Image (tube, rainbow over all chains, first blue to last red; front, top):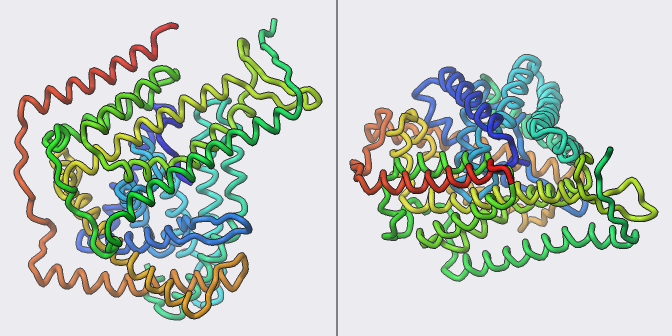
Length: 198
Length: 306
C-alpha cells in the first residue's frame, strides 16, 4: 500500500521529501560509485519481484518485500527503494508525485532497519538464516504499516479511522511476507550465498 | 451547545449506503479496466523486453515546452494542489488537468491505467472516512434508527471527496509530465536542474532492465504453469514463490555483472552522452508563469473565507 497524492498535509509531504533526500544521499555515499549501475539493475529485479501477487483467500496481495531488499542490499537499500518509486511513476503504478518522499520513508526506513537486523543476527547456518530472514521480512511489513499509519495520522483526528484500517489491512500480509522472505533467503543461502554477504 | 444536525433514516438504508459506494467504485473500476485493456490490446502484442523509451511523436505545446520548465512547473503546481483544502477548488483543478491532457494529446488508455492504480487507495478513504470522522459542531450526520452507534458524517464524505479530487487532478498530470518527451531527455532535464547525474543514469538502467526481468519472470512463470503449478493459499505456493524470487535474484545478479562488464568494455566512465542541448525560450517561461499563476489562483480561492 502506497500513499497517493492529496492525502498528507503539505508540511508532511515536504518534510518527507527533505528526510528521504538526506537518507538517499547518505545511502549513496555508502554505495561505491562503480557499484551504482549494478544497484540499478538489481533494483529492476526487486521491482519485478514486487509485481508478483499471491492469493490470500478470495483476494490477492502484492509483495512489498522491504525486509528482503534491506537484507540483500544493506545500506544501499534506501537508494534502491527511492529509485524503485521513481520507476513506479514511470510505469503507471501506484504512488503520487507529491507523496514520493513520504513513500520512500515508508519503505526505506523499514528496509534499513531489517537489513541491519539480518546482517547482525544471520549467523552462519542456513536454517538460522532462513529464520532470521523471515523475522526480518515480517518486521519490515510491520514497520512499514506503522510508518504508514503514523503518516496518515498526521492529517489530524479525521484521519485516525483510515490509519487504523490501513494498519489492520497489513496484518494478514505480515505472515506471507515473513514466510516468503525467509524461504527466499533460505533458497539463496543454498544456491548463491555470496548474495547474502554484505 | 452541540450543533450537530441528525437526519434519521431506516436501518436498511445503511446497508444500501454501504453497498452503494463500493458497488459504484467496483463498477467504475471494472469499466475503466475493460476500456484500458481494449485500448492497449488494440495494437499488436507489446514486446516487454523493449521499453518504450521514446515518447510517440507529438508536436503539441507540451512537447515543445522546455523540459526543465515542465518539471519545475508541474512539480510546484502539484504541491499547490496538494495544499488545497476545499472541494470546489479541487474539482476546478481536475478541470485544469483535463485541459492540459487535451492540450498534450495524452493517450487515454495510459491515463486510465494511472487512475486505476489509485482507485483502491482513494476508494478506501471514500468508504471509511464518512463513518470514522469525529463529530464536530456544524456537522450533518445521517443516523440510522436501531443502529445508533453508526453515523454517516457528510463532513467526512466531503473531506474524502476533496482528497480524491486532488489525487485525481495530480495523477492526470503525470502523463503530460512524463510522456511528452523521451525518457532520457526528461532525465537530463532533471540533472540539469541539479539532481545528481547518477540518479538519471540509474533510472535509465533500471527502466531498461526492468523490462528484461519482467520478460524473464514471465517466462519462468509460464514454465511453472506448464508443469502444473497453480497459486493457492498454502505453504507449497509460498515455497514455490520464494524459490521463484530467489532464482530471479540469482539470474538478475549474474546478469548485472555481465551488463556492467559490457558497459565498461564499451568505455563507460560514469556518464551517458547528452541527447540534446536544451535552450530556454521566453515563451517557455511565460507558459510556466501562467500555469503557476493558475495554481496560485486556486490556492487563494481555497483560502478565501466562504
